[in-house]
Length: 243
Image (tube, rainbow, N blue to C red; front, side):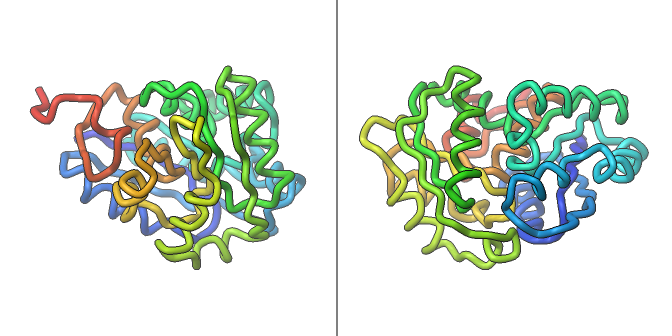
């Protein structure tokens, strides 16, 4: 059994994670601890507060006691709004507090882009444009070329959580770019676990979504690789037969 610990702000698309457990079809457990969300707003100051040590502390202790092998902050925006250096410090502090390998969804995206062999990407974000631009800057700091950025202007996680598969597909299509080798949907409040493969079939390229990437990053930290084609190209880099 591989146990992953996720710190998930508030309540929005957390039901994606049991679905991902089922789709992985393996002995993987995802333990989710909800952290305080404060103001539900996709604004820079609110997002910085969301990822503050004060908001994460109680959840870290609960995950440490749960037997998790790695911990991931399951929020892209609460990480990248601090910039590359600030997000790196955030993860270091998280690892120190948990006594476990730690990361955040934002860093998971960087490594997932590398995993699928992409160099140029398009960002399909539900966030307002200024927040989406900060994610593009974060990717650029990691050497990822962002050829298109779209911010749909959704102001809250609660609103993003109400989007259905048709809304997600429309955003992905409208955000795609001919030069993009992958399309990234960075909001963990967006339900995407059930439609990753359909998105990739529609766009004809890898699609990386926040909840998918979060679990993949946790598995990477735990040194566990899984082949699960229903979870998209990101989960097809290993043989089907696992040793």
